[in-house]
Amino acid sequence: MSVVLSPLAALGRNTLAGLAVLGRICSFAVTAFSHILRPPYYPREVMHALLQIGWLSLPVVGLTAIFTGGALALQIYAGGARFNAEAVVPQIVAIGMVRELGPVLVGLMIAARVTSSIAAEIATMKVTEQIDALVTLSTHPMKYLVAPRVLSALLTVPLLVGVGDIIGILGGYTVAVQKLDFNAATYLQNTVDFLEMRDIASSLVKGAAFGVIAAVMGCYFGMHSGRGAMGVGRATKGSVQAAAILILAANFVLTGVFFSV
Amino acid sequence: MIELRDVHKAFGSNRVLRGVNLRIESGTSMVIIGGSGTGKSVALKCILGLIQPDSGLITLDGQDVTTGDRDAFLARFGMLFQGGALFDSLPVWQNVAFRLLRGSLKRPRDEAREIAIEKLRRVGLKPEQADLFPAELSGGMQKRVGLARAIAAEPEIIFFDEPTTGLDPIMSGVINELIREIVVEMGATAMTITHDMTSVRAIADNVAMLHDGVIQWTGLVADMDQSGDPYLEQFVTGSAEGPIEAVR
Image 1 (cartoon, each protein chain N blue to C red):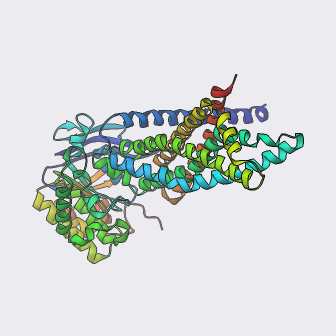
Image 2 (spheres, each protein chain N blue to C red):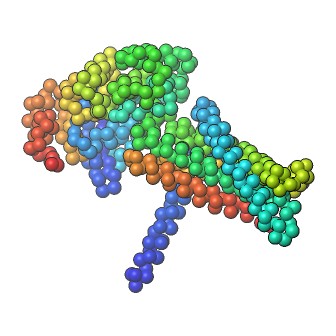
Image 3 (cartoon, chains in turn brown, green):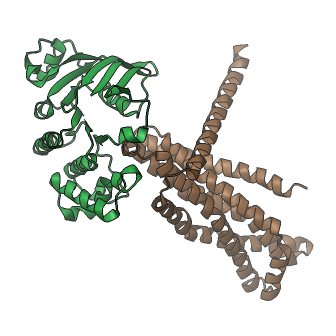
């Protein structure tokens, strides 16, 4: 009997533990937002985080988007050719980039670049007692370290997604015009005509959600890191894994919210 | 005056503090000694509220430290951390003036920088080192910056966590002298945690030995060598033989 029950018991324990962690993360996020709203504010920290999360992520977001847009155009052209539908390249590139690939790829790149960096930085601060030092200097770590990062991610990742969408569409446009002999003006006209405001809104909302997830995961795992180099490593790895999974799950939920008829 | 009454703290099954009773009079320098893992840092962090004790009472001037305005409470403290705990992303002067650049003690930036440079000078560092980053400093210099940060807002109470760990004997002597001078000069209450008996003799007015989660012995530093307490004697002499188990 125990042979049958043991795996079930383990599954139950792990599920409960997972839900407990999810609950703690939600509580952490709520606390972070409460610190964003209440003074004191640290504008220098916010500016620094805006630079790190937003501006310095632009190259990686741009490169990811342009290659993805280009590859998407080639794939759609090749796939569409099987049933004489090559002309849908502008529309499918636009909808694919704006609704899905733009937000998801930018979210995942932010998880890789920003979440890992935040988690490693805060975990190192914890290991080296810098977090304790902040407290003794009458500075709340949630307010000084977490709130500026979460706020900056909330503000900048939607912009990054917007930029990623545009660059991705331009990647598709360049391939279509240069390699697939599409007419430039028609391509752009088709793209603009096909996109709806709902597509753009969903893209930006997803960007905001993914930005918050990425920053909260980095901060949560950093603040709860174990001791030593191993603790920092585990915090970093855990934060990126959790952020990537939550971004994909949130994408599914948000796609359902925006586009389920 | 800081007072700990029957303070207990456990981490899981590990009962670190098992009823600590200790009194630190205002304006005196108390040094807490004891082996590694005996809970010295935990006791210190309990006073600052960085760790919540499981039971017992900690008071500052008769008031429970868990009640009242936390910012006002912390503003009375300065702390030198074992590893310095300097903020890597800030230059030295901003580390020192951290408290003066934000919060209730905020000053204009230029004034805060001037104070930071003065404090750096007080601990033997030059003004041109104010714009360096912590990673560009040696271990001894980082301790000095940590010390300058601890005294920057002229606190009434200063905590020193292993102030000479990782330093060579000469630099240890310099840091010990600086701590003693600053504490006397400021008239501050000091609480130091250390294994270093040279530090104890240089810094302490009073000594308390923490062992097995309780204060095993406490008294004047001058009485330490004639205490008659076998635990303290073993610790002071560094002997492997005695009531404290030494793992070989």
